[in-house]
Image (cartoon, rainbow, N blue to C red; front, side, top):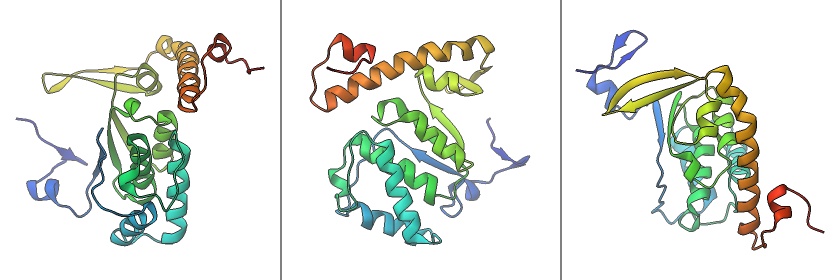
Length: 203
């Protein structure tokens, strides 16, 4: 059967399921809050439970980071139950980056989160996190150095991103920027025109 090794040593069941010092933080597609807390109260609770140093400063940084990632802004007084799916994912990514001690982050389908996904990955990487992403997004997949192909519950292939694939990123980034611009216009209740598609300023 399959085995898990860390630093060349097999991991026991006790270590795998121990809530203290968890190695992997997981961000799923569905981030539904059930606690009737404000964003500030939620972050304060997390900072307290993790014994975060300089908690107030960390809370502010975490909140600012979440607002940068989210498509729509929210405040520290917003109830977490009122956050949209994208806002919830942005908050949890920022929380993981600034408060979680887990060195490995597993993210499921971040392209469906309604956030700036590339910036999210960069923030986690800057915090020296090892990031695994389950994705079908070519922009994210080709931005990585390697991608793992999963079939029938196991690893079937590991592909190193080639120079040709890296060269494709420029074209993919332009397409992605166009789609992001269109989504932003629709979110703001604006009408779409060819000028919007081409990135030309409305007169």
